[in-house]
Length: 174
Ligand SMILES: Nc1nc2c([nH]c(=O)n2[C@H]2C[C@H](O)[C@@H](COP(=O)(O)OP(=O)(O)OP(=O)(O)O)O2)c(=O)[nH]1
Image (cartoon, rainbow, N blue to C red; front, top):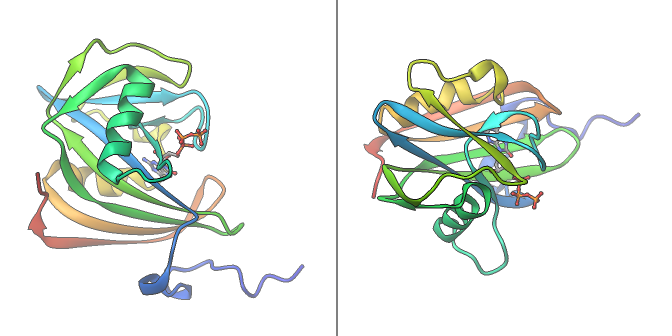
């Protein structure tokens, strides 16, 4: 099988000109020392614990996507949204996804399980990284420390093959 063009290392990719197949979002509500997570029931990462989120729809801004996904997955609307950074995922089968990460400090509505997601609150000092995507243990602490970041990752299915996490000098913004 021809494998020469398949990227396996961060340095194999020209990230300045990299464009993902799918733009997407994640939005974490963080309140009273806890973070609102979901057990994802379908889509990319089904079965894993993650933040609420999903892919952009046509004509949608990333912020509108983050809000819509939280409404669709848990029936709540976030308040005090803040942008924290982005994660670029290149899979060696050719698929790619560019994920923009937001937090919120509050929400309107009642958290409700849906066909897409089962809600779960985790204490900030007990985030279940062993049930999450492999990269999350690296950038979620950066997000929680309020520093903005850009992450780049190469995945072979569920397995992370390489990564680079750049911390930006500015803090996360409202
Ligand atoms: N925390 C974390 N989230 C990830 C990683 N990789 C990855 O795609 N995600 C997120 C980004 C999106 O929120 C989600 C994938 O989108 P999705 O399949 O849920 O999209 P969707 O809700 O639009 O679903 P669908 O209609 O296409 O089924 O997974 C990762 O490594 N870590």
